[in-house]
Length: 216
Image 1 (cartoon, rainbow, N blue to C red):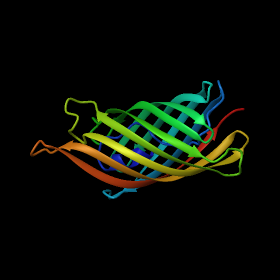
Image 2 (tube, rainbow, N blue to C red):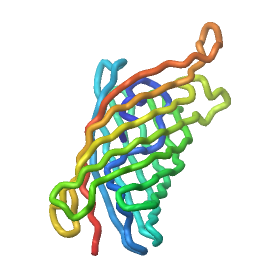
Image 3 (cartoon, rainbow, N blue to C red):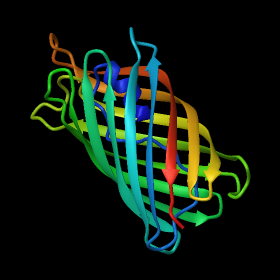
Image 4 (cartoon, helix red, strand yellow):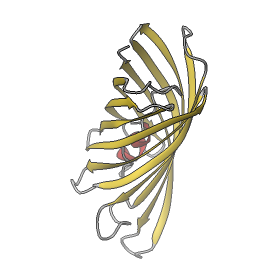
């Protein structure tokens, strides 16, 4: 949800779900995990903040890989946007994972802000099995409106997200994850008077919590 926190309330094109809320480990083959969470944030161009909810289902496919579906719903006092994305994760070595996936967002204040996009990033985390596990990430995303003029009504958007978080086991099959992070975004928008494409930047912040259930 974090990248979307800034661009929703800044009236830009919103990327598909890019919430992190995970460490670098991958599931075993055919192992399943389910997550649900929420959070909120704001930015330097905002008069209000926004909040959101997120859900995730992941399945291990072996060889330190997993696939799944991520979804979110982001809203402010003026607009609601929802999205879904496919997710792929691979851990080439202990404590490191690469994540990527395509997705789509729909909704917005005018109802016509449907966009497609994708993301790629990396997650590093401390060893599992400790009372508190720390993790960090770096994630870049892109969203392109689905309309004839992709530079109108918010235009093309890019976001870079830096999350820092922790994971705390609550039970053998349940973990609580929490993170704080920063967001930087760019949007390329057509000026309605000159018809030139201009680039606008913004920065923001977010916080999020989630519970993950992973049956043994």
